[in-house]
Length: 385
Image 1 (cartoon, helix red, strand yellow):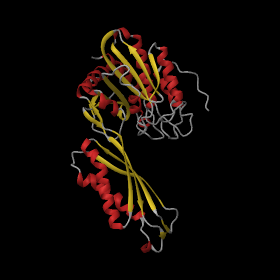
Image 2 (cartoon, helix red, strand yellow; image 1 turned 90 degrees about the vertical axis):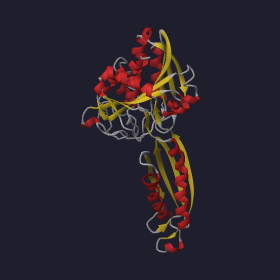
Image 3 (cartoon, helix red, strand yellow; image 1 turned 180 degrees about the horizontal axis):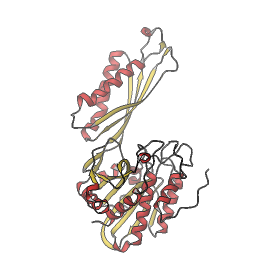
């Protein structure tokens, strides 16, 4: 195990972000990160709950005035990516990297907690600082809800941000209504009949069947859905066969479905199965479809988003609060926003070519000037009524 560096200067969000970047942990394995976060929150005089949703942490700040309870969320998990950046703070954990900016989210929220704790007499109601595990596919947000994250204390409204290399530093992206897409998964197993590659007439080739299905699935979006309803059907993996001259017995396809409309989302398993069943019937194969609903669409409450706009105008200027288009990423903050009014917004971190690399890339990095903007956004939201 890598020996941790000395603890960073907690008054410096850049130092905190770099420390967390250096020691990333995968989804639902954020044990050391959770201890780091909990100890810092406790040092600020907050009431701390640990082990929420397995490795999640909640810090509760009691304000000096009556008012609502506001939840501010940061995710903690890293990705199974081998970092290619050569920086003093590059990942010390082989094959694991904060390639999506969750290290920045934590640094921002820890600094916001410190600043709000120092002025708690000015805070109305309560502020709950939510450090969530498992955003990258493990639905840690839902696990925290199941452990009472929205009820101890009762949450009235919730907010989260995400750093984004597609926006310049000093810009904030907002949107009313559906912002991020739902994300669901499917595994489709095609059963054929194996045989010699030189005698295909004696076999049922599952690879040929799978190729027909992959092409036909694209017609769901292009020919079945209304053009106003954005959606994506992507087959990201196909596994079949062992060598060049053998027709295999089966092929396994894995894919994702993204959409915004609830009815469109609910219809996707039947659409995929209808196409698959027809092709398999025509080509003498059979199939098994496992469709798993995962993250719902992230939907922003208009009133909460207006609050973000107003805070953004104070922090970066009205002209730098941009109305952002929908995106086909997904985000499990959607679970909390299904149950409480909230808003999710984007924080620009692009400061040049080095910080314009896409998320989930092994060279992802960010312009750390954005941390101050994020802190001011979160503290401004917390004290706004």
